[in-house]
Image (cartoon, rainbow, N blue to C red):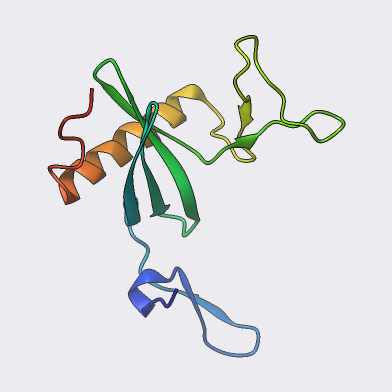
Length: 127
């Protein structure tokens, strides 16, 4: 995916020189798609203010609450089989995580608000 200079955090100015470029002060939503699968209502891609590009962020809804979670993959046992919980459902683990629950909550709130800002009908009909 191509980027303009305004989207990049750094620009190479010589063989070994890197100069800072405009740094966004908030999360940028670069892609989003609706998915209706259980509590999963969508997926998002964002660029954080530090330039980290994160794809496949899950957006979930349950009992009137909407939240976002960093990407996760099925947890596998020593034999490579998907680990199941006591209900027989696949267990998931994220290869990246926030250092605190507060940071996770702040990210989730900010992303859900940004999705609503850019698409006011995004969660219409979500329970």
